[in-house]
Length: 93
Image (cartoon, rainbow, N blue to C red; front, top):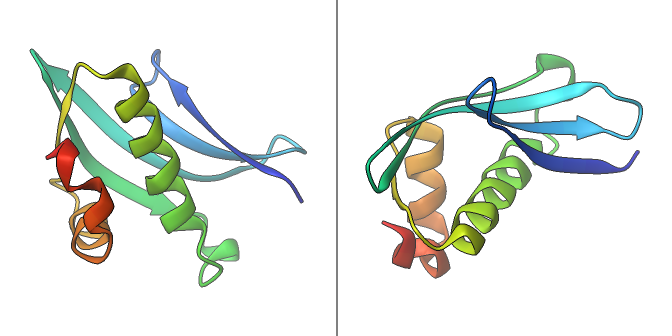
């Protein structure tokens, strides 16, 4: 199964989607001025324990880094924990 992280601006969330179109996980966000608040993340329980949540956060952060105009507020505990384990993303805070 191939997975893709994509930004869905209409729903204000990042989505982890399989090549079959299944929604594996999501991160809800809100943007205020130059900050993006990643405030809720969840993974489909059927796919838990496979590292998909971390893959989703990494993909979202890479997209935010590429945009280059936002800092991240990790309000979601899972996202905040990811930052603690991955100091290579500290520049986004």
